[in-house]
Image (cartoon, rainbow, N blue to C red; front, side, top):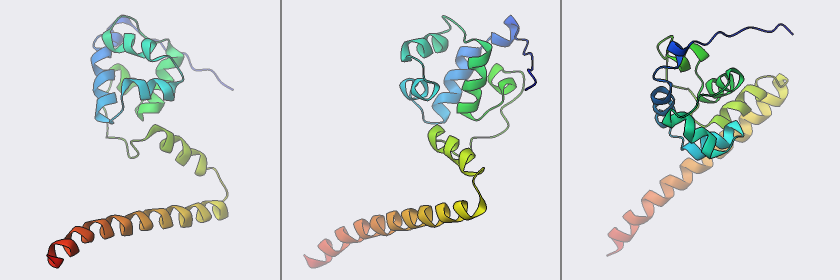
Length: 138
């Protein structure tokens, strides 16, 4: 496996804490939740957002992956290209793993997921109609 050297300068880290906070909040994640995804203590993550410390290069890669941005976007070297398509980092990771499954297994998962989404929609529609029936009955 080829190893890529990442050179991070002090200039790259200017504004890092603010960018990190903005990216996390725009994805609807709490500090605690992102720390869980990164498998670190919330206290350590909090220090990064406060600007007390900065993560090591390998952790920058993990943070970028969890937030669905490039390391350059995370460091402010490049503008963030787009909002993440999947906001839940766990679901994002699963989708990447599912993408590697054989087509037949992917089709089976699509059927299961479609059924779940449809049943949730039906339940929501039924819940909205219930108050209407009660109003009409009065």
